[in-house]
Length: 550
Ligand SMILES: *[C@@H]1O[C@H](CO)[C@@H](O)[C@H](O)[C@H]1NC(C)=O
Ligand SMILES: *[C@@H]1O[C@H](CO)[C@@H](O)[C@H](O)[C@H]1NC(C)=O
Ligand SMILES: *[C@@H]1O[C@H](CO)[C@@H](O)[C@H](O)[C@H]1NC(C)=O
Ligand SMILES: *[C@@H]1O[C@H](CO)[C@@H](O)[C@H](O)[C@H]1NC(C)=O
Ligand SMILES: *[C@@H]1O[C@H](CO)[C@@H](O)[C@H](O)[C@H]1NC(C)=O
Ligand SMILES: *[C@@H]1O[C@H](CO)[C@@H](O)[C@H](O)[C@H]1NC(C)=O
Ligand SMILES: *[C@@H]1O[C@H](CO)[C@@H](O)[C@H](O)[C@H]1NC(C)=O
Ligand SMILES: *[C@@H]1O[C@H](CO)[C@@H](O)[C@H](O)[C@H]1NC(C)=O
Ligand SMILES: *[C@@H]1O[C@H](CO)[C@@H](O)[C@H](O)[C@H]1NC(C)=O
Ligand SMILES: CC(=O)N[C@H]1CO[C@H](CO)[C@@H](O)[C@@H]1O
Ligand SMILES: [Ca+2]
Image (cartoon, rainbow, N blue to C red):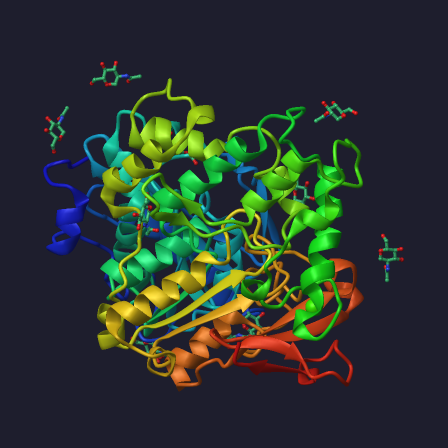
């Protein structure tokens, strides 16, 4: 192991070494990537080339653990994966070469990464992202994108598992989490891909959601050369403030049984009332609010004085309900974070309205902000909001409004957010869009050339929900690979053919089951436009809706 200089420096000075560039090392031609499903000669050759690569790769500051051929149709065991990542196997649907390595980033930190290199390589490179405070290689996205022909990499973002504890007493682990693991994994991954296929990639892509969405914007803001196309969903940017906001719900609800606490059945009642007030604003009563920014929900109609039932709210409970739909301000009157959008009442009962302090907030403040495991999340308040904002480790906020790095380079960004997100308010996404617009002095028409934002109505946190939530953001959420219906292939079409997306067509399957067929589809609009039912025609087809100015 070489710790003489951080890999960071090594990468920038390109001093790390990759061996195995000998084109004849496996007795094959250097110009023709292996492929040919059904041709056992080619498959065997790909397989043995894969097995051999581990001993030939030499990446500065890293240890290559193994390389193995994984045949299409394999149910791959992930027994080594941290149990908290809850991924013990993954279905692999294309022939790939799987390479696992660990890379050190300082004398007390590093990350694990994997490269999944398909035999059917399209010449495209891709990095996947992470989620929450983890700590988990996103195997589902490696499988999804490698099967689509991308040479794909993903890291554990600098630590194993979902807990924030590894941040404690080790700011290098925080630094990996904030930006270093992803960026370094991309630099290393591109070299591995080039080395394996004996030629550089043509175009480079990113796919991530939640923390992965924040990582996409971190790349856009600080590492504009990493990607040609960035797909960033439900970004956890304004990260410290988001963490303050998530931790503040406990202050509003109190624990179960307290007079301010609203039980899950009551939230279900509130949800009906929210829909009563806001569902039809888009022209159709269908259980989906297309444009929550227009929904000014007022729970006062549910108040019944002094009672305690599942049908109505006490005045104190009504205050709780009102408060979750208000933006959070600190004691100086500065906006910390926008409100939770109305419509996510039921799903948020398991994240924010459950009467316990939000777990990521506790971990982030204890182990990354204060380095004090005794910090009490129940007592969170304005001072904490301000401290987190000020300390802002390694600029994890990810809130720079100047995207001229990507614009000047020609990199494209598709930003999307589920309109019923119960973990990261979708109303923070247009706030960032407007922030970019005002920082760069660009109108929406001008931003269109490189940056487009879409609210995906009725969609929860990165997936699922009552709306047309399948936009190709993952394998499980893909109706097809057509660019019109698949956000990743839409990005490829934009980058490689200049076809920029005007809408993202989402699909809702019958009973959320792809094999049962399509229940309805909706073409989600590019911000600042919103979706409106035309008033006639089958509302289940996209043509009965139109994107109009709000
Ligand atoms: C398999 O591929 C090799 C090299 O590309 C070719 O020579 C051979 O004919 C192919 N075999 C079959 C059965 O297609
Ligand atoms: C993969 O294997 C696991 C057990 O290791 C099993 O639970 C799961 O059902 C299998 N998946 C498929 C698609 O065969
Ligand atoms: C993380 O897990 C991997 C196995 O997936 C293991 O090789 C590695 O040592 C672990 N890292 C740490 C810091 O525990
Ligand atoms: C390669 O792609 C072709 C056409 O897209 C497909 O039929 C074949 O199954 C793929 N092969 C592998 C090994 O994934
Ligand atoms: C680790 O590196 C830091 C700075 O790079 C240095 O100050 C420290 O002494 C090193 N610790 C060890 C144990 O080598
Ligand atoms: C954290 O670091 C401090 C100072 O270096 C040390 O006193 C303390 O024992 C460390 N705690 C843990 C749990 O590593
Ligand atoms: C409401 O009733 C439940 C049980 O029926 C009780 O646990 C709770 O404390 C009561 N809340 C108020 C505010 O009276
Ligand atoms: C974070 O919150 C502080 C108020 O505590 C505010 O001044 C700052 O603008 C906020 N930053 C972002 C990115 O929302
Ligand atoms: C969908 O689910 C509902 C409730 O679980 C069930 O009654 C219905 O038969 C299912 N529909 C289909 C087409 O499977
Ligand atoms: C398919 C192909 O290009 N095959 C060539 C590989 O290289 C050898 C010699 O280097 C040639 O003889 C093959 O024609
Ligand atoms: Ca509606």
